[in-house]
Length: 295
Image (tube, rainbow, N blue to C red; front, side, top):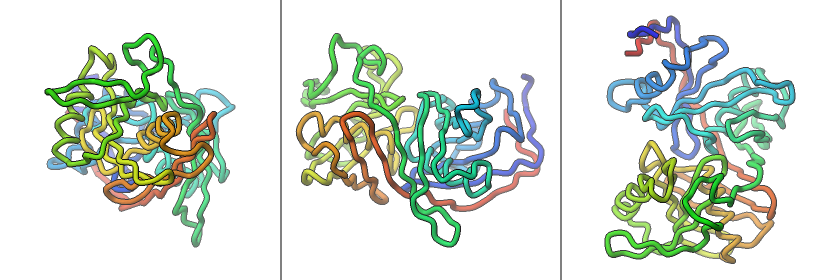
């Protein structure tokens, strides 16, 4: 595709889930070419020179009639992610309020497969909370992927003469969960970046979660997201942390776990089979660009 590429009369929304912010648009209307999408994400997500966001969400037609709609998401570095917990809540709220999908409980196609958001709290016609069946966690090292012969749970690793214990799980995207009392932001930034880029262990890189357990029902949570860096929240990361915490005996199965993030809380429940996530989705504004130039 020759550049610069122009999109005339581009309409979008800016929304966030607990401060994890996204630009969302209807790809069915604009049909942006595949080779343009990564560059578009890097352009429009830039916090200093454009709208600015952690990622870009697309509303797409499903590839099969068993789905109601299809979700795609790109990080601000242009890489496409398989799944995003905060993003899927924003997506579900938007497609319902726009009457693209009229069901309160919808079947959404994602790169990880079927995800089922259920719109739980309606005030004056506005969705303020969404519960999502995120499906089963993936512990098979080859499918995460992580380089190991067996599931990685509470495994010691030494980084810069400091020892951490990490666990690896996928919720459609890879996560490295570290339980630690130290949630200092310098620790999160330094060791999150090291673990994210440790491709000898995580071939596709990884999201990194740092979790401080407060009780069997709650924990403090910080995240270094793959392709983004430190963000205010991560839905799939909280799901991964909930799963690992249950498997390690830190949390109870089938009981809600409240994860305190930098800008609010997410509630995670792991049944032993599937993971449920509940949290808010907030529209910030709607925008229109007469001529969106991508180059």
